[in-house]
Length: 291
Image (cartoon, rainbow, N blue to C red; front, side, top):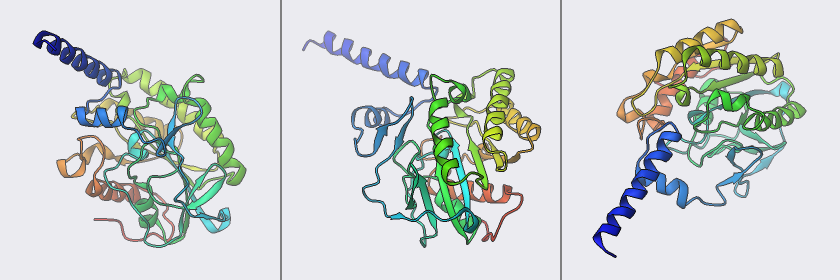
């Protein structure tokens, strides 16, 4: 192939990659781009209802009887990638008292968490173990690179959310807590619009889970970008609905805490767990927070 043709191919590929990353509202290495788009393992992520792609492989999971709500703490974890399976380390629990509820069944929890997007680790197992010694039921369905407007959209993630709500309430009508971790993809959304959208979203969640304690993080940081306006809106909306503003995750942004300057490393997860546990207003049987 002529050098001129090689240059043309290179320019086309570069332009395609840049356009992809701009549209996805984040910047990633070419290596990660190639891995995520050309080498996806079919047994790791499977298309689910709507536009969500979540981890559903139960072949290496041990199914157990679902604990009764009276004997367990039921926790919902959702939002975007840092609420999903995008951490740089996969966690296993030290015992067997943390279970993962998915599609009407329960499994001993290990990363990646069933029901959430991605194939890496997550914050939920270390959070559950740091929060309490009791049995914990984790229900996770975070989806990476998502804006609040997508969760409100009946042509996007709203049907996925509604599907999860139906399955959760059939087994656990009143989960103990729900933790919403989201904001990075909305860093360029106009502040007033974001606050309106988040208000509608939290109003919807509160309506669906009226007896569930709701927690929101102050989250906007990814790849060097953050927004004090986004965090302020998250705080204001929390107060408006009587939810608990759990703390600002944007403060955890040292190189050692984020392996790609966006998603948390093992040490970053430890810091995030500490922030979440300290932000829980009425912990039950809590262990010491992670230092």
